[in-house]
Image (cartoon, rainbow, N blue to C red):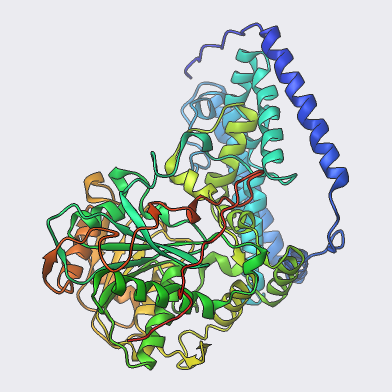
Length: 619
């Protein structure tokens, strides 16, 4: 067994310690004062709004009615621990031994060498992994539960298991212990200071820092592709990007991002900006920058996001370029809105969308992935009540926490260890800065979306939903379509994206990208990362599609680029933002994107109306 050198303790710096103690005392006092002054909401203590307690009660009742199964599981647990004890004894006496259990591939919690080289921590690690496997196997697969309850028990069992990982505690994490000895405990004091900072930043709620938010400036080192805001109303700003080619495709390209996040996920840095790449390919790119709504916009519904959103943006693109027909991209929730828009235009006999692309978008919500855990009738009612009490909108932090829980080890606990136990500041990372830049949502829109689409799945039904007085039927939209799913997507499973493609009657292409919901989409060709699968045939079963698909190296962007070029409508001289039918209002990235949610003392950006912006034309 390798012998690791012990860290040399460093005497604490008395000046630094005094500063830390002073900061901790000051922040603790301020936080306690705010806590005592905070008004209490109407939620009664111990209320099980999410139905977690009831779900586990049902699971245990099912288990207790099958004592033979329980005994069998306990016997398997005992056998695994017996294997661990045998293996550990051999290792303790310097004999070769295979571990009883290994961390799953991709589990980065136990990367430090001490988890393998030091006997006590190797034993703790394996003991935890065995207990975790059996606890999840027992509670995560209880027979006889209804589907929603089973998913809820499975999800929250994994949350419990992840929270109890030995990596999350000082005395059972060898890396933290080494740092504590080496720094004389200053890491824990710094960690406490970081914890108080995060509580202060969240207004008393823990908002774990994922990155150094002071390291990024919109328009300076993130969201830097040159362009102009050429249109705005109370829901959006429309950005037109400056061309980098002498000629561009005649049909402009409108990108509709989700309003649950900021648009600049598609324009992070020059090296990974989809916007910059598409401009370089010869497209006149427009993108919607949604407003960060507050109480004044609480009554805005899905109809408004259609009329003052996609339809108003299309009218503005036509006014700016003189082109009635355009190509459209919808990403995630933006793709759901685009699908509804296509159904609306089809009902109006409008052919203004020549071709359309969907990035990891829900259209058919039959298999909604792990988010289904948070969406059932009692939880939606409780959410509607909280939005009403909060002034008519959903705070961005609530949705951010939900998405982070889907990957809690990577997006919660790794930062708890780094920030609070190791006492380190988070590393500057553009993607995590964007992830932390959450956006609010109007109560009316969000309630409609959750009920009509997630719970009732009416977007796939002809006439199932009515927007602006028009029954929506996506099966009437017959333009060419391109769909992208990502193989590891935990938000919009790729098979669900594939099912959505089957609702449309026209020519379609489906591509499956590597990685997940964000990294799989934001994967520039220059990175030479991952791979993607293609299959010109589209059988009804996604498994059949995958079986006949060919794996391609690199980024799917090039495949899409070839496809959309065929729908570009030829070339015309490049268009300069502000020099067409619409004048420039301000430089990109615009003012709407700068309004931060859930950040203390963040500047409020007031939407500026444009005369006549509320009028919607359908051509």
